[in-house]
Length: 591
Image: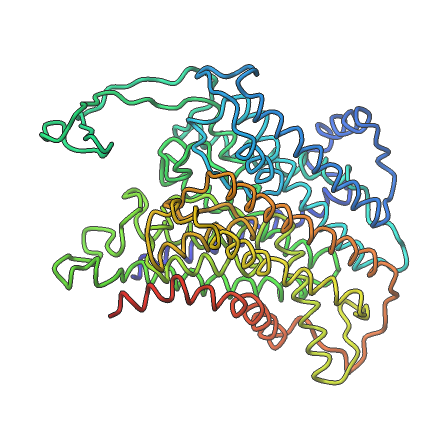
């Protein structure tokens, strides 16, 4: 276990070490200050403004900023929906794949425009190169850029002293894409190609299997010489295409949608331990940097460190819980002691659904990182985790993805919890709540509550609707408590804009596609509306002087209260549903 702890420590230390300098760079970019890429990229930036007819000096109020964000996302949604529906008529389609059904195209378009990347299909067998590269990958850049833009609009409102402008939405999105996301994605893409990920537009390749396999009448894989085999297969098709570029931004932008059906468990998307290290760090790199950027932006780094501490505590606790339960496995896996579950000479623990290249350690780490972030990529099948090992990712998503969360949206979600904590703590000591020198009034509280309860509310509604439909039972791979966990995980992943899945759940039905699509839309744009209203309200409030009775929002006590508030609202809201799924399954296994 010592080696595992050392590996976790190295990952976390590298994450923080890389995020701190990136936070300083991010602030410079969003402020329009000079950076190492200024000479090269500013002319490109100015051409973009001329093409879309945007005055980069315009300072938008909260209403125009919000309308711009919604309009931009609506146009993106319609454009991507059209690409997916018309795929069969568009170029770069060497496999001749047809367009998607209307419900799957709607679900997929919503998924990528909302930074969720929920996938009810296998990309290598359903989407053309055109759809993957010019449809999905483009959205993988601009949707995290929208998150960064809305976050900085909120930060400007927090520090403003009577100035009503929150910046320019189109300038913020352009700078975040050009100066932050593209350079980072280029680095990760080059490493992935170097390590073996395809990056081409060639036809799919056919290769000979080292050992033929048989298929029985039910479609199950058996030995080639098995009498039940009705067909022998000695060839396999290897998907080609622009995979490395999509993989890079899917991780950095907390998108998560894989080029291939098995996502980052695929040797094509994640071929070596080095790519696993870099991609795993990429999951949380920008979200962690955003937290430190917050401290720098408000000119009080203690505030950023306090929010970081609360998030970090929750992340480490989740990581430890997943790792322990996956390493322990279950009595059923151990066959009452007849199967060795130790780590001498092997990974040990629950290896079901995990790549032997990564084992329990890297799979547990990835599961914690991808569900703490609003990412959703997987290098193991969460459906095969132990009941508690699978429950912790559900909780991380159900908290509102505020444990660092998605690019931009994770931090502004957590700031909703911060304001709520300040309000409740102020009531406890009998003082008017203040945060960063600004009084928190009824309007700010209403927006903060919306930020805090939107995710769990949408999750429970979505899970309830799907559970009421008898057809959902036909989509399950398992009965009983684990079957309900599959439904709950799907609703939580969509409602939390995550995108990962319990792989046993067949979500590609018209009803499920529509329900999850509406869930994703609501959880993306209701908080964005609340954030813009909150920013507009805060920018009108004058700053008040700090006094001896002002509640500190940067000490250990406040960090404790913030963690407690996140757990009370997020975890307890979901407990009844969790009790019907993973908790019940764990209790049954213990009997």
